[in-house]
Amino acid sequence: MAMVCLTDFEEYAKEHLSKATWDYYAAGADECCTRDDNLLAFKRIRLRPRILRDVSASDTRTTVLGTEISFPVGIAPTAFHCLAWHEGEVATARATESLNTCYITSTYSTCSVEEIVAAAPNGY
Image (cartoon, rainbow, N blue to C red; front, side, top):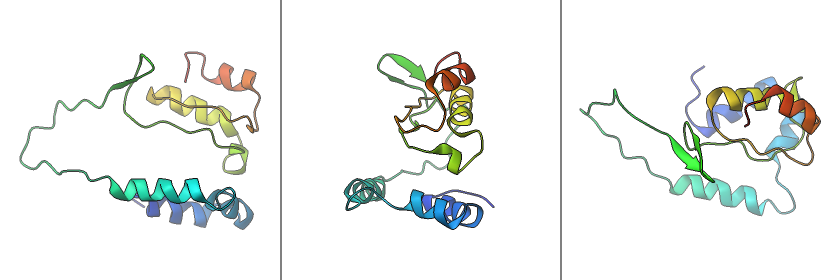
């Protein structure tokens, strides 16, 4: 399955997670204000297709607080990664480090800060 847009990822997650886990991730806190604002923000983003252009030398690098990352996407502080994957935030930190992007650890992590730092010793 090619996952291209948010709904593709949602469908995949719904098929592979338990109902309780899916319900947790699909819900938003309180009245879902932040979740709804985020969805509206993504709908406002427009990408301009560039056709018949040389894209062999594209560069998505940027900086966050003076640190260079490979592309302008990071992992927000979300809780309970072990609900989705048995290695939890340790796996998230490893993946983030391997992609050279940023990850903010939640105060509700299912792994300790020490475990997360050990999994990504070069930072995340």
